[in-house]
Image (cartoon, rainbow, N blue to C red; front, side, top):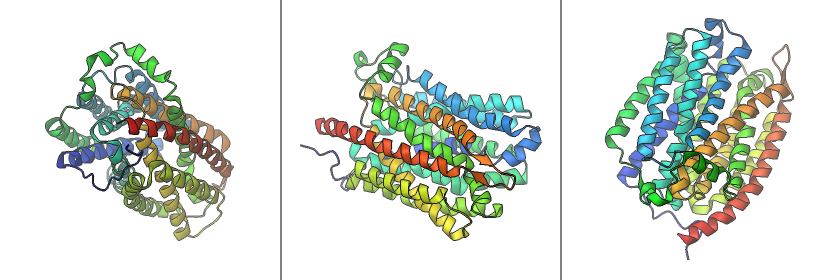
Length: 416
C-alpha cells in the first residue's frame, strides 16, 4: 500500500514538465507583480491623478474584489473546457486590461481598468493550479508548488525594483507597459509549445454541463469545506499585515524609507532560495509536517515582528527573511495538500472557488486592518500588534483544519 508521502527523490521532471513549470511560474510572476506594483506606485499615482488616499484604496481593493467575484462566476464552467484554452482566454484579457492601466489618464478610467484586470487575472491562478495538479502526481507537487511560489519572490527581487525604476525614469504608466510586453512573449510561447490539458474531459458523462449546478455542487461538497475555510484564513492574516508593512517599518522600526528596497531585495532573495527547498522538504518529510513547522515558526516570528520597536536594519532584514520562511512553509505544503482533494472533473471549479475566497478574504482583511490600525502624526502605527495576534489565531485554526485535510488526503492518495 502506498503511503501519503512516498519518497519523491526518484521522480524527476521531464523536459516538457520543466517547460510547463517555467511558464506557469512566469505567468504567476506577471499576475503577482501586476497586483503588487500598484501599492508602491501610490506616491506617484495619487498626485498625478489628483486623487485622495481613500480613492487610491479603492483602486487597490478593486482588483481583489473583482477577482474574487470573477473566480466564483468562472467556477461553473472551469471544468468544461481544455485548460490551455481557458488559460489563453483569461490571460489575453489580463494583458488587455493591464494595457488599459498603462494608458489610463484619469481616476475613473484607472479604476475601471483595475476592475477589469481583476476579472481576468483573478481566474488565472486557479487555472494554473488546476493545470499543474493535472500534470504532476501528488508525490511531486511539493516541489512544483515551491517553484511556483518563487514567482512571488521574483516579483520582489526583480519586478518591483524594476517597475519603480521605470516609473522614476518615465512615469507611473511604465511598469504596466513592462508587464504587457513580458506577458505577450509568455503568451506566444504558451500558444506554440504548450500541449492541450484536457484529460479531465475524457469521461464526458462525469463533467457537469450545467454551470450553476456545477458551482453549487462544488461549494456544497462537505469534503471541500475545510479546504475552503483554510484558504480563506491563510489569506486573512497575511493581507492584514502586508498593506501596512512598509509604514510600520519606517514609522515604528525607525528604518529610513531609502532602505526599503534593500529590505525587499534581500527578503526576496531569501524567499527565492528557500521556496524550492521547502517544496522538496514537503515531498520528502511530509507536507503536513512541514505545514506544522511553518505554522509554529510564523506564530513566533509574527509576535516578535509586530511588537518590535526601533531596530537596526540588519535585524529587520533577518526578522523579515525568517518570517517569509514561515509563511512559505505554510503556503507551499498547503497548496500541495489541497490539490489532492478534488477529483479531476471538479478540479478547475474547486481551484476557482479557492482563489475567489483567497481574494475576497484578503480584500476584507485589508479593510478590517485599516479600521484597527491608527497612524499617528509622526508616522507611528498604533495597534499593529493586534493584527499580529489575529494572524496567530487564524494560524492556529488553520493548523487544526489542515489536520482534518491531512487525514482525508491519506485515504485519497492510498486509493491511487
